[in-house]
Structure formats: C-alpha cells, structure tokens
Image (cartoon, rainbow, N blue to C red; front, side):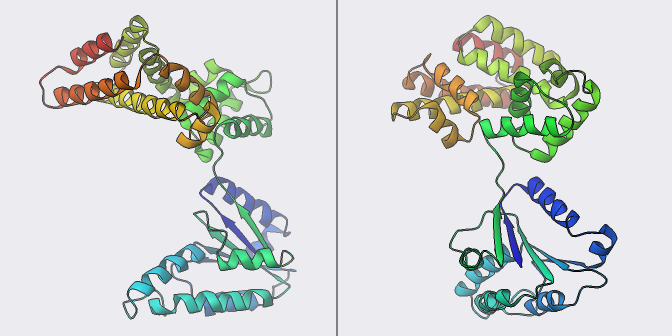
Length: 340
C-alpha cells in the first residue's frame, strides 16, 4: 500500500508519520525495517529494491521517500525544455516522464508487506498521476493533504493543542499567540508546552502568561501601536511608540510595521469596495478573521484617497530616516502627529 502526505504543514506531517510508525509495532523492529530516501537522489530501481525486500522479524516494511514526486515534476518540466542536458541521478532529464510512468505501473504491484510513504513539502495538484492512481484504487493508495491552519482553524488548533498538553488556554491568550507567532505549528507547540509547564493544570493559560513567557509577545505592543494609528487615537500611539523605542526597537522596524498596517488597510478598503465581507477578506489576505474584522472597522476611518496619501507619506518618512534628513524618533513623532 502507498501513501502520499503532501502540503506545507511539515509539523503535522511529521506527527502523522510518527503515529503511523507507532502503529507498526515494536519501535526497534520498525527501525530495522524502515528505509528512507531523499527524492533528489533516489532512483526507481533503488526504490523497488527496498519495497520488494522481505520484512525481517516483522510483518511489514516501511519505505519513506521525501520530496520525490515534487522533484520528478520539476525535472520533467526542465527536461521538456532542455532534452539531453545534464540530469539528476543516473537518469538524464528527458527520462523524468518515463520514471513517473514506470512508477505508476509499479505501485499497483507493491508487496502486501510494504508500506510506501511519499512525503512532499508542497501541495500537489489533484491531477498528479500518483494522486489519480490513489483515487482510482483507495484500497491501495491513500492521500492526505497537510496545510497550515488559518483564521478560526488556527485558534481551534491552539485550543486543542493546549488540551493535548493536559490543560487549557483562554481565548484572548490563543488570539495573542496566533497574532504574534502565526501558523508556525512547531513553534506554537513549543510555546504552548512551555506555558503549560508554567501554569500547570490548575488554571488555563492566560494572556498575561503569554506576554510574560513568550518572547514574541513583546511584539504585541507593536500591533497595539499600529492599531492605535489606524483608529486615529494619537495619544495612545505616541505613548506606545516611545515605549517601544525605549525598549530598544529601531525606528525603521516600527515604521515597517506601520507600512504593513496601512498596506493591509488599503487592501481591505478596496475589497470592501468590491462587496467582500470580513470572512472572505480574511481568506484573501491570509489573516485570522478577528484581524480582518478589525481591519474592516479601521478602514472606515479613512477614504481610499486618504490611505493612498498616507502610504506616500510613509515612503517619504522612510527616505528621510535612511538619508539622515530626519532623526528616526523625530520622524516617527511627526508621522504619528500627522496620521492622528
């Protein structure tokens, strides 16, 4: 039987593979009967040799190939443009299509004792021949896509992960983690494990815990600062700017976050003008829904013409700081005063 794990969520892929191995039995025997290949160097003959081997003191053999299907697709495209050029492995580039055809012919004849797993770092097209083969014969081939969660799905993942670590997390704390770390699941899991060790099972992880123990949560003040600017609350923005500067932030770092915020506001304003709601804007911009909702509300504080003028002002401020025309702190003070 063969499996295809594909997508950019490497963390969930690795966990799925570990769970898959655990189900095969004694870890020492599983390790003894596992072969792992790099898709950039493996040949079909090497793969077949590993798959056709009889398990040793076990019921099954596990063969893992990393990135081969993606690599074959890229080689095939190159081959069609430059037949006869220098190839990868033992085969010339022009044979990439033939290798894929031979693989498709071989997969239905995998020994019953073999579990072949293709681990692909990118999402594959639904019309890929190996995926089509699995779809046509689900008893022999299984496909699972791994994409990093976004929006509400990411918040659900954080909540479930805290529960999996034996505790709980408050919704504001989950929002803060999602905001400052994003959907890097491996990094998120490490932070959740650390926070759980700190609070134990006595109470849920709170927002204050995240701010105390997660170094990235220091960036939350930056988000508060740009939110204050977008909401045109100048007094709050000035206080936050100087708090960040006193904490060691460089003026250009703060400016880059302000630029990002107003770029998102321009995009949100345009999408609202096209009739889109916050939920679809979140998907379009790859943002959590609560962030998209906030952007939509903030965008109401400006006309599109005003936002475009502000964006030009941001460019002028960037140039003034980098050329030494203005001191960075003074430039930010003038910018905040003008925006608010």
